[in-house]
Image (cartoon, rainbow, N blue to C red; front, side, top):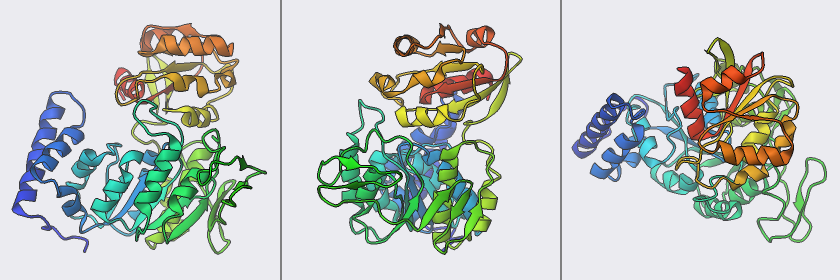
Length: 412
């Protein structure tokens, strides 16, 4: 069905045109990419537009608390080996943003779509995916998100009877519980660094046992499934036992795990692991994440961390002390207005780094660092923080809107 250039009704075409016009006005006004407002306008004119836009595509959905934007990008690169791809590469992952992205893909063969965890079931109903990748579930945006076990239950209900192949992380009990309602699951041993949201059994509430890399519930028998794919050091092990080297320009173990999952997804679409992994090497940065930029005569690496699990992974990426670090935290609508998650992050791991703190909630973060016994300076803005930072490349870690603020400040 790829290349079907006219799958839309007159009403749908009008909705697409109006959405693109609204997005253009938003961009001209300096209000961002316009993808969200464009999608909202389009869906107002044609509530079934998302379904219509996806009907000619082989779709994969990617959902998780952390890593979904990067994994979406890696999968998209892999699938381009076999055809044109349309994707919401900028991370607008709710129905309006997804609709805007797909509106530009009339000639595409594949749709690679990042989906906010809370919208997964609804988007899956609309776009009839061929595959769904589930990476992890952990606490995030505490003021608006359901408790993680409740979210896993919503996924489980939404995936029940789903015809798509589910590619799921065997190392996250919440993901396994959610995916187990589906009749067709490919398990990937992608690892789980953050375990604090998965100590109780999602099936019965019992205490999870975690010997080594395994996990199980002694009370009800719920346990880790046997994976078909696995991350093993710098290699991906496929279902036949073959080991394929991972060569990424993106740093860290978490991105190797994303690559392993992406290779399993690509295989479901007929792309061999070697081809998929080779194509992933082309990805240097994802929506500004991992970019090294010049600002005020200094090199700054931009890193995004939105929640405790993300901060834990990011701490493993930064250069060792005495590398200077700038931390920035906001609590706007897109971040979640509840900053109590700061107390779940082990900021003691930053000991020895000269730290500057900025952002809307810099004083919240300052209190947390004070309690952690970590030395820091409170600064007014990125320029002030860079001026007061110790010599060397600066590692900059920020949550969502703080990250966008930083990108604008440094001209990235």
